[in-house]
Image 1 (cartoon, rainbow, N blue to C red):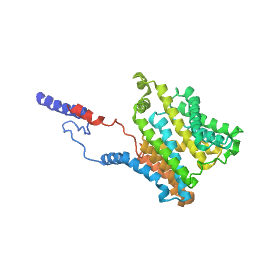
Image 2 (cartoon, one colour):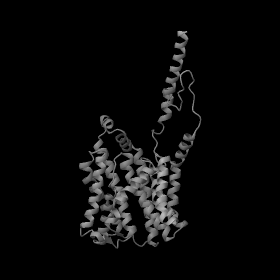
Image 3 (cartoon, one colour):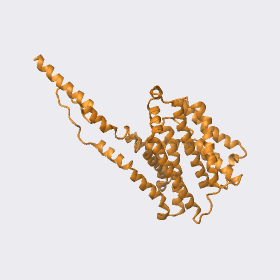
Length: 366
């Protein structure tokens, strides 16, 4: 009797160990019952849908459709809304490097947006520079801004870092509001576009913005999958463990912050050319909150998800314009519904390295 009980217990234990070591989808049954493989469920469907949405061919198709938009509908309203959406995508992708890849909570990202816009606006309106010539200076100004705020504060973590970055964003806005060469409360106006190239000015700006944003999204995606991107993810998951494994966490976080600052500065330059006039209220805390909302809604750390989240945040209020005064209430309710039923985001990042899961399963089975 005791031998038979011991035999059954050993068989159940070996079945449990085999299921765990294989690391394949399995259910561990109660004592005395077999271990079975789960039936296909909605999880499989969700993973398939995520794979399709994350496909590079879908990304190429979306980029081609964006570049071809003026051929499909060249009305001024559509082009204006499309440029706004593209600039918002640029901002969301930049913040995703800081928040999604590296896990740094930044509530003052609009500061880099303002630095880029004001740098470009001052050089074009007061110094007579062509807009395209301001790009290197905008990048340098954004890097300097990142050095000033990131240098002394990136050793902070969590809520402390969020508070400091929030203060930095307000400092930039209030400073622009009180300086004469920034136009003070009135801001800057008469900011030129990219010049006459034989096309409508808004279509020229749209194509340039679309090309810049496509390159930025591709660069961000490649950066996140490279060696630096892996270091960012390790810091995001456990900074102490990453440092113990030899990663210089301060330098890694600093690189993420500078990269995000450059993205924000370039987006600010495009915004200034698009609006032709800027003022301090254009860069308030609401911008930082909306950009962070797009990152969380799309899926932190997922470049395709962040693009989808940015499109949702920027275009949904326009699609609900027919609801008049109710549109922002409907917009907020829809966001709540999405976050309740999809808390990980519309298109979350994959949690395993490509090609590793199969090898682990084979190693466990052997």
